[in-house]
Amino acid sequence: MAAIEKRSREDWQELDKNHHLHPFTNHKELHEQRSRIITRADGVYIFDADGNRILDGMSGLWCVNAGYGRQELITAASAQMQELPYYNNFFQCAHPPVIELSSLLKEVSQPQFNRVFFAGSGSESNDTIVRMVRTYWDLMGQPERHTIISRDNAYHGSTVAAASLGGMKAMHKQSGLPIPGIVHVDQPYWFGSDQALSPDEFGIVAARSIEAKIKELGADKIAAFIGEPIQGAGGVIVPPDTYWPEVQRICDEYGILLIADEVITGFGRLGEWFGSDYFSITPDFMPFAKGVTSGYLPLGGVMVSDRVADVLIDKAGEFFHGYTYSGHPASCAVAIANLKLIQRDNLVGRIKDDIGPYLQGKWAALADHPLVGDTRMVGLMGAFEIVKSKSPLQRFDQEQGAGGKCRDHLIANGVCMRAVGDTIICAPPFILSHGEADELIETTWKALDLTQAALAE
Ligand code: PXG
Image (cartoon, rainbow, N blue to C red):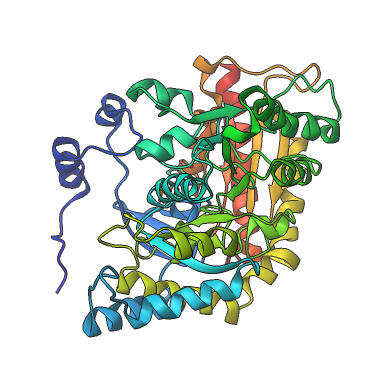
């Protein structure tokens, strides 16, 4: 029996307006224009309450990697709920799904990762890391080493610690963040720079802003560096090739723990199992969430390297940290089914060798449009930037809302992508067919033409 009543779109919108506070939303604007009610989904398509079919170029929120309507995942959740809908992993307990998933995650991760700590989301995973990192250095007899270096315009979640790790100034301003002991350095955003350096030179300079911060504060104060292999919510910032090797060098040289936030890049998005594999780095922690269950149920966690886990196990006694839903059985069952599906259908290889290169080629050609100043895509994670003039490079005034206009034209024409300022970002499900990729690109050209016409008015 369906738990949800049948209502008209207008009724849903009215109830939504009156009773629902949305995440990351300007409610005044929303109440003027009303929310888009999504009622169902299948494959790579979502459907709204008016029956419009929209190609989901964002995989929900970077998570529905296996696509919608996957019966294996639905059955896994349902069967697990029948067998054991909930039990905790505190107080010397565990259950088969959490154990099975732990060993499966070890199988797909780099060799330094043999252990995983579960959470309910990416934010909780990053909060876990802040506590674990500081506890690790306490146990190592270096309690002064508590400062974590992150980057401007990073996104690591919305809880107090995760938002502090993030480098979103607007978020910090609203709630007195960051908390003490979290500092930020430059992001490796070459297209957003004055472009005086080559991308490779710029990558080294951006990485060395970490080293400069270490020297400024003292290496004996620095616990860890955290970065998304490719920044997602910040606008799909793909670092120059020189960046990550230099970051690894710096972390190694100063003995600093390296945290690769794989919440978006994990489980195949870049055509490798993890962004860390793509960039050949060997982190000490990998927080993950989203794609681990393809978003069908909430689950997050942290892959913890032996370097840290061995110390925690040997020396910490009890680590006073955990969530009611750490390793929720139904979420774990879905994750197992999802990872097995990705393995069985070779979806990671498909991104690397087939649909990735196919979409990337067409995406790069968008640069021929007069409005498109930069295009970038790795695996199935991409962006293009809308500019007023390419040479000399000139951007639109923010009040013109070029990115928002383009996003609206995209959705009105049947493709959902997200605007970060004037950057349009794209992360479609891994099952995207060539025909669906063509549809995504054709609609993008059309939306760009409509945006150009609207901006000319
Ligand atoms: N790390 C990264 C790299 C993320 O992208 C989180 C942590 C936090 O995960 P949770 O599960 O707590 O949301 C994220 C989340 C957007 C957008 O608009 C991106 C995220 C969340 C919400 C919106 O791009 N990423």
